[in-house]
Length: 122
Image (tube, rainbow, N blue to C red; front, side, top):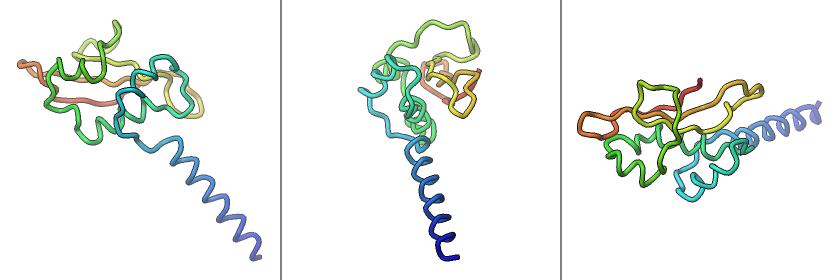
């Protein structure tokens, strides 16, 4: 019976480690953000997780369009989400079955500052 408990705790620890490695938001690192352009199928979803951190901490709120472009670069052209002012493709949707894509989207005020940011799926 004691071995069953040890195995159960080992499985729980492995699942927790897997969650930490693949899901916890990363602080924004500009070099990682731009390197992710080269690998849209990144196993560790670095760009997704940095976007999660940017949204979660509100780090983009209040930034001007120019400051966002200096940090994240020029967003690639897309016909998706035309009701948002800035749209960044993050890559394939996270999860077991990746059918859609995930996007970092922002709305700007009339003065050109970020008023809203979120990660959404198409």
